[in-house]
Image (cartoon, rainbow, N blue to C red; front, side, top):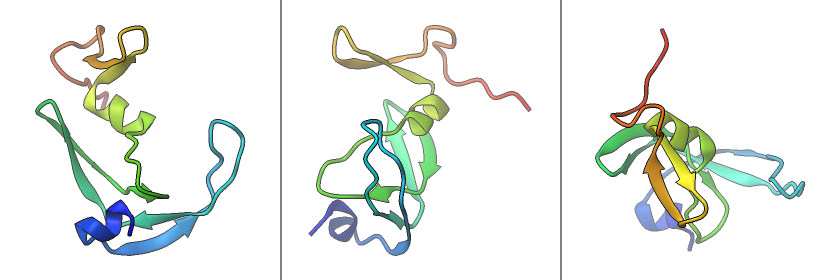
Length: 88
């Protein structure tokens, strides 16, 4: 049972994305979910492909976070420490 099933999410479709390592695997797309990290919220359609939960680049950018690779942590984007800035 994968994470989407455990959460009771409806699977809506499938896609064949290309991963960073060049591999292509069919992933299911679940209904939209609310993503909250450190008090910041966004929504998105999760790609379901197993038991591990990964937060993607688009969600992190929308939330205004960057990965501090050296210290293995998530930090607010130094350019916008108070939250994401949207240009309209």
